[in-house]
Length: 249
Image 1 (cartoon, rainbow, N blue to C red):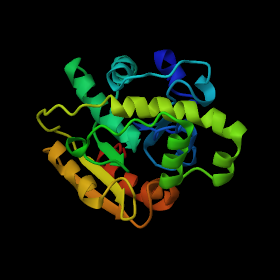
Image 2: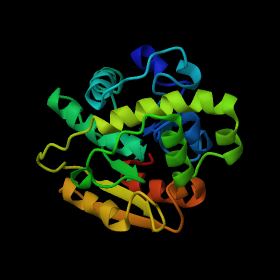
Image 3: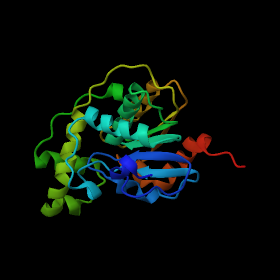
Image 4: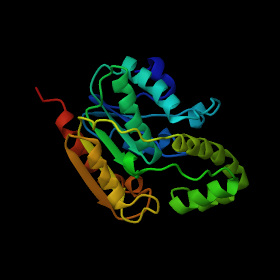
C-alpha cells in the first residue's frame, strides 16, 4: 500500500486485514503509534504522518482542518479498497471525526469503527484562545504532559517542537461545529479522570455522535493516559475491532 498515501504512511503497514489508520495529537507524529505495530491480530496498524514532522519535515503543515480533511479523504477513498477503522488521539480524534464527514460528503465509504481518545465530543468544543507565543505553547505542553521536561527546557529541541505544535493549534482553532445527523457506525471513546482539558463527561458526550454501538472507557491518569497505558488500550482496540476480524476458514 504505497500509491498516493505513501507520504502519509512512513512505513508499510504490518499485518493484514482491517486497516487501522491512526491520527496523532497536536505536535505528535506517526511514531506515537509505532509500539502498536504487529500487536493487533487481523488488523494492519497504519500510523499517519501529517506534513511538517519527522519523515515529512520539509513539507509545509496544513493551516485548516477542512484543508487537511479534504486531502486525506481523497486519498483514503482512492487507496483503501477494503474495510478500515480510524483512531485519533486529542486533535487526531477531531480530525478523524471531520474526516469521516468529508469522506461521506464525497461519496466514500465510512470506516467500520471510530475510536477517539483524549478529546471532548465535538458539540462541546469551542475555539481555544490563541496561543501564539513560545511561552504560551510551552505552558500548554507542560500542563498536558507527554513531553519530557528536558526537551521543553532545551532551546534547540523546543525550536523544533514549537512550530508543529503551533500549526496544529491553528488547525484546532479553525474547527467550527456543524450539527449533522449522527454517524451510523460503532464508536469507542477513551478518556482519563485527571485530564486537565477533557472531562469524563465531555468524553461520554461522544454518544450523541452515533446511532451505532457506543462504548466508553475511563483511564486513571492525565491527557496521555491512553497512550501511556499501552496494554489496556490495545485490549480496548481488540474488543472494538473484533467484529471486523476475518472469519477463519
